[in-house]
Amino acid sequence: MNERKSQLHQRAHARYDIHAHVDVYDRLRDIYLGRLVNIHSEGLMLVGDVAVEEDRIYTLDLHLPVPIAGCSSLQLGVDCLWVRTADQEDKFWAGFAIIDLAPEAAEIIRQLVELLGETPPAS
Image 1 (tube, one colour):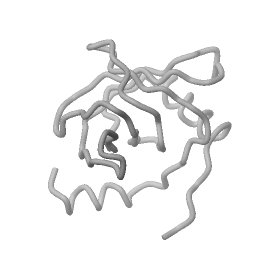
Image 2 (cartoon, one colour):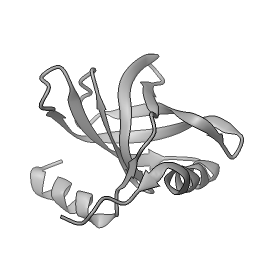
Image 3 (cartoon, one colour):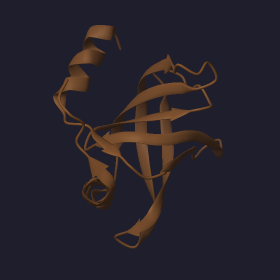
Image 4 (cartoon, one colour):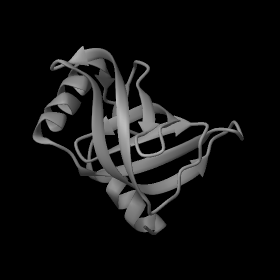
């Protein structure tokens, strides 16, 4: 995805910062990718130690800090839109579009945001 499309996508939905530790794993490779930074109904951002690849499909497991709707984890199919090196050179930011989620997963995201999220101030 080009930079302009990425910027437009980023502005399409309010991001909800998550103020709890939600660990994110690559389900297919069974490796820890990082921590959830923010999420909304169509995308998410994480920061982590493992660089993911742009324009690649992932199945992510989000390990919830508290059970939500009886679930301790949330599985999402995502497309990596962009990857950036963080200020700390060994950390990476990554933005994803959610491309596959079960109806109950959408409700878990809504409850996660309600329970642990905060809308960041407008810039």
